[in-house]
Image 1 (cartoon, rainbow over the protein chains, first blue to last red):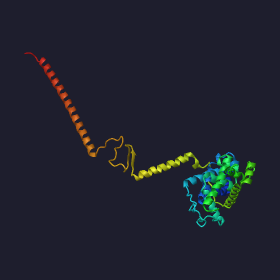
Image 2: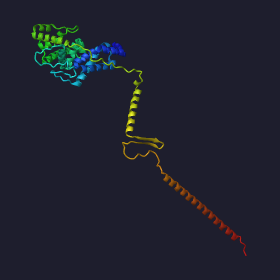
Image 3: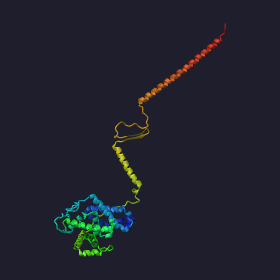
Image 4: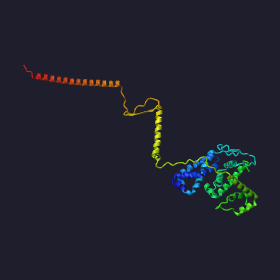
Length: 181
Length: 185
């Protein structure tokens, strides 16, 4: 399908979009912490893919190429928005208010359901630096191996491991600051 | 090995992947002997489980798939693109001229352009002679007639004078001849 797309088959591109849009959306959502922004990033990503298809030489490296484009768009949007990093309340007002829960700062409070856990993780992730957040998303959510993570982040394997470790520690620290043990 | 040094290598223990270096014997030995590092590692494993509870979900809306313009489309040609911009420029220029009440004239007498933006008298037409009024033309013609009449009169007077002089000369000549040929008594 990727080869057909690279040859100019627009139907193949449509199938490619349908196949990858969920993955791209979830990367963007976890990076930005906001569904609407993630949706915009998905649109921008596939527009970039459409325009710059000619720059992809090896069809087998399409996933790596796609993830890089996605993360670049995430970073651009993140820089433009400069989101609030307060861990005491909802990060983005655009999120469904019914799902947003004001966090208890009582030490020892435990999450009650999946939505609350997800919100906690979302806040903890957005409190990390770009490198640590990217490493965690690619490893824990996209499911890439460490070498692939290093390739996408364009760094040595040891650096990717270090970023992943410090990212996990960062999430742990942020959760503790939010009162979760 | 120091705990801090070990902890940075927890990733090797958290992710057992084929192709990556296996945890070294030193690392495994330290983990067996250090409760703090074991607790730290368990904490990270618990965190991994917590992270995995955030499930994927579908996008809010399907992505709008862009379409490529066909190569054979006329509007894709650079000439047509230029023509489009040129047409827009002409329309804008006509709109501006209309708004400024532009007055443009181009005939045998020359080219003239005037707008309400520029106050003052209308500019002179380029390369056009001065126009005379009807009265001026009449005056000019009368002057010319008078001049012609004067000229004719002078010519006639000169001619008459010439004739007169010639006659006088002839008369004088004839008189002189008559006196010569008069019989002597």
